[in-house]
Image 1: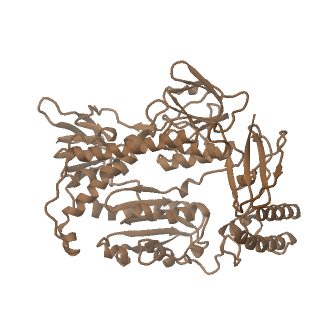
Image 2 (image 1 turned 180 degrees about the vertical axis):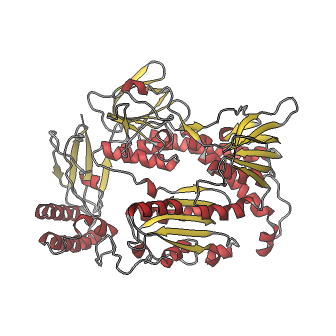
Length: 626
């Protein structure tokens, strides 16, 4: 069966390109055609691969309109499956990663189904990112209302602030329910089949859903996520010894709570509990708090987020045994030295939160049926998320994304990986740059980062033989931050002075989680400092923190931009032909410049098929000549 992609164009033509679901074969050779200004799939060439299947182009006259309309498969039937499979793509797990992959697959015209054994939304929506942000929103408001000095500086007077625990808990639960409903409805609206039941792989391209339903798919994505990791010796009762799953329900606010682990999860919950009146004790196995953060940012964050608050800590110790409260006795925590293993201390607290990270949820998936062995529970994959079996070979048509593969245990990383896989199965090779994926900790103030920390960058520089430089800027110099009376903060840039390459950016301060994306996009697109420092930022805004950061970087005078030095505004003009920038004197490159000048002007005037044809003609001619 075939699905079609229809393009309605100005007053000239309507273009329909039927696509066989077998048009993209792994062994086929890609036809590398770039269409400037138009998405590749707009003309049916999504990195098309040569195939024995014929493609027919039908041109029909149209009497109206000058806009380009693209529809990839009918929403009602969500594409047509191949004759030998129930689906083009089957996703096991309906979390954020599976949801992102499913929506992108439908956009690409794939018949798609998603399997969920619990509830749509996975950990992030139901027991992670979403409800925790609801609690953090409350803690942020409470901190503002409790900070008399801050309010007085703004000329405000507020009576004593209070909160209703059940109301706070309801806010978190209602938000999770709303987002879960949004995700479910978005998939249903696009025609994604939601199959309820636990998914088990029976063999190549075959999955059992629930107890008896068996479905087949040309490609399968594992997106089963993770669960809280609880070390040995810790007894979780869900009441006084809890994980993040339990804490998000906020069934009670203890007077004194110990948090085992000072990473993202532990820090965010310390923000919540201290804002609601609890005293917090951190238990950290390493010698410093916040070990996953850039050390300089971590020290500043400790000075602001921990030292002034009702928080104490024990570092370099393991919690070898934690016993829940019972019979009138408190929670008992036995600590030993992390290095010598000698007994160190015993704590008696009202509650203990285990925030020691997360473990992949991969048991019972039936991976043995395709000869796959997990590594510490993680499914082994290559850089394209293709699953690797016990013999080191790729398992055909099987992929794994998100927490289950352990590459980067973040919800948005899972979604990006899922989209990358869909690109591959529809014929376009794509490798995700994980160093361009940002991370954030939603404390007050926030912490965000992308790329390498300073120690990681120095190690890389020493190994590869280049120098690094550091640039910093303070929120105290930002007008908007000062207007908010939130000048506490720092932005840090790690870069190569010889080339202007951005290696890492770390931010601690007001809305740091929102500010980091300019840096992450720059890394993803390969933008160098000498280019991005010319960008214009609205004044006065917090974005100027990044503006000043990039402007303060000292790039050597001989460093050149990786793109073309042209007068055209489109960044794609610079990126599209990086592979021929060293051949400036060839006839082919002169033609590139000529056609860029032509189609840049045409694309700005006529949003129709003509620019695409000009681009196509240009690419074909340049490809032949080069």
